[in-house]
Image 1 (tube, rainbow, N blue to C red):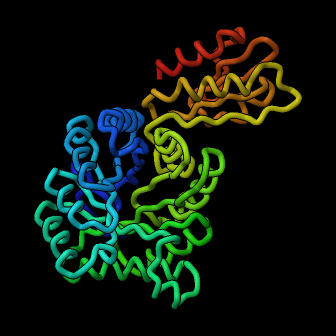
Image 2: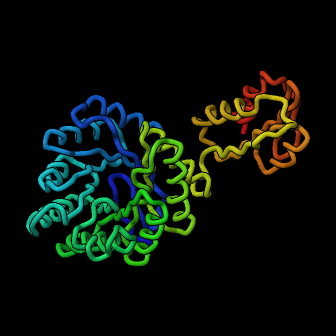
Image 3: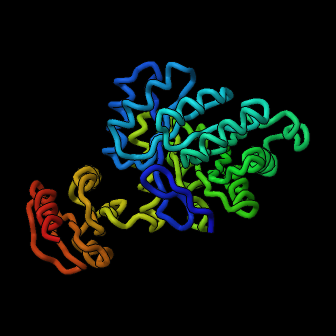
Length: 345
């Protein structure tokens, strides 16, 4: 089991529930837009919000965002250790920085000391595209072994100054490389692991790659926090992350939708109906299984494990509960009648 680390008003690692992260993609110069997007992410369920601090002016983001949301905030910093110090002074909850990129020992010590003093964890973020020249020369390419060696090197720089509240991420845009790297890291250290496929792509392929990479590791007990990276609205990252957790049974406090792929027996617009049901369930906070099935012949039986469901007919459909038919309903009323039954549960 990994080490448990305090992160703002929550905990990371040590068997705690998997935390879902995302990152603001509004320009760091737009404070108002950044605050607005942070609020949207929190409303979508995001549990940790990260944002870039590319320069000194961007430090002005910390306090307004912190005042607007109640989830831990992470400052994403590269190279300039003074930005890490500034973020820590302003109340950031976590810092993402690679100690090997910020210069001499005294700079690393300065960051480690202020983070120790303020109980701020540090995430070491290794990507396949940013490995040290010496490590690349040793391995010839960004192999899983090379990335893990880089991560352990960065961790050792912090450990030297008695800093151990470390989170590690070892991301690659190659799913197989990413999986192998995290498996190796899991064997090498007990630091919490932040899972993600970096530069995963646009919504469709990005979700598929993330589901394979993140999902396969989680099913083997590897990973403590996840971020789905999409070239899209970050709110979609949050929804995708929770869907991955639902699919493998790690999130059971909201509805789980099952629906059939339709066939020649289908006589209603099941695709449209299933999409509408999914949208209506977005704000429901009940641990229930909901089924949307295409035909009355097989639907209730095939989905008898569902708490509630609908099965389409010809211009009508059935409402069923645990496989037992409750009543027949006209097609245009199926959605509303389903939601009424869900309200009763």
